[in-house]
Amino acid sequence: MSDAERSAIHPRIVVAGAGSIGCFVGGMLARSGCNVTLLLRAATLEEISQNGLTLTDYAGLDVALSPDSFAMDTDPACLAEADIVLVTVKSEATAKIAGEIAHHAPKNAVIVSLQNGVENAANLQAALPEYDARAGMVPFNVVWVGGGRFHRGTSGDIAIAQGGGHVGRHLSCPDLAVYERRDMAALQWGKLVINLNNALNALSGLPLRVQIGDRRWRGLMAAQMEEALGILEGAAIRTQNPVAALPMRHVPTVLRLPTWLFRVAAKTMLSIDPNARSSMWEDLDRGRATEIDELQGQIVRLAEQLGHVAPINAGVAELIREAVAAGAGAPGMPIQELQERLRRA
Image (tube, rainbow, N blue to C red; front, top):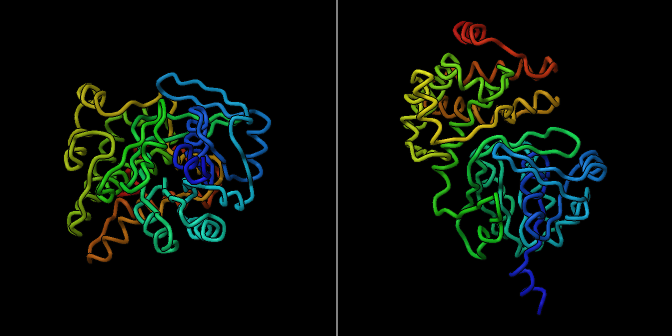
């Protein structure tokens, strides 16, 4: 069997920028027998080398993987062996990883962005015109607990742009479904609108289930979403719900339902672990840069282009920037204080 034939059956997968999402996805693929290399930072490599990789989730998944189950590297030269590259770096690192892919990865490698935001796939495509670079969408959140443990706190299946090579089939495995779609843009914008709550959750410091269980927080979530959806409608941008069949325009209405009724409606849409928090909460907790400019910032910039304003999204973005500057983690802001700060903004 030739190398090309072997790669078509058992593609070599490099997870570029293996943090929370990358280690969880890469670990799940390795668990299923895929040939996986995690391209990661030295500190992460040391943590996983010492502890192995433990994958848990809201549904009771509990998998312990030996470091021998997959390869790890801090040198981007490992991209030279890739048939599929899963890009999981933060948005600010997209240009850097694109340069490393261009320098090392073979031109027949498929590049899949599994990043937040709506511009990363396009940025990869622009930087890598000779490659098959595709958009992807990860609807669930993963928290890096420490000690090599990564916990998936919410439900949903990964989507990637349709193309040749049956990439979705190669990436699908038990407990991690991946499907291909012709039109990713509406799904990505829908996820962006849903992900606007990442910042609210980070400011609250509460577990997602507790936050969403409070009608006052849901009301603020709904107002923020309505503002964003109005801006997107003005820009003729379509949205599709990434986690349920419910059209995005109806999500704010569901959020404003009385809590007992909301719980009934939401139970069919999304499973949430009692301890799950947003990725932005994790960023504040670990003292990392956030992706606020790719979420609320995207809505604010789009509003400005239309000659409008998005005061709720702009106010939330500013509060996150203040929390980053303070460097004290999630501020644990009560809903009343947050509402008052937004009113004054």
